[in-house]
Length: 192
Image 1: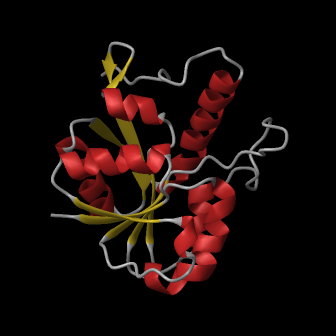
Image 2: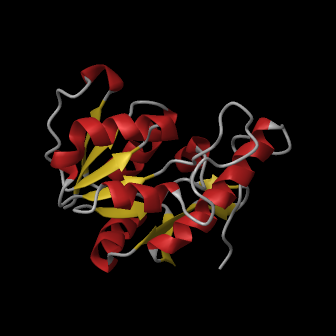
């Protein structure tokens, strides 16, 4: 069984942890208060933190993340204007993270979903679907299997290059919710 370390203790971290635990996975959380004092001993590491916090995690835990599957759930928004992404044009937070962690297998996932849709398992009348992008087929398969075991749907969305589109979709969904055009219990659904 795959084991998970989740950086973060907020709504998304707890919702993702709940899905994984429901599927039988062992899950531990590392809080911001632990600083650089925790040990990352699990197979898969999920960065369930706001985008600006990723740099500190990489600085403090970069060596420990070497050889691990690292799942980036962030949407790299400009939180001052809420009107743009803050990664180089054509790139993504996932791709930039892979550059900073060349010894890790970086995946992009969970960024196109809201925490409430993990708890309910639904987006409207449709099943919540987690889109997973990355360059390592085994890492993607491991995460997809864990999500499905936890009761949700998951789709391999392609290579890490697709993180660019996933982040654009996540950005759009967040701005719609923040602008009260959709509810935080809604979002985009995949109908297959």
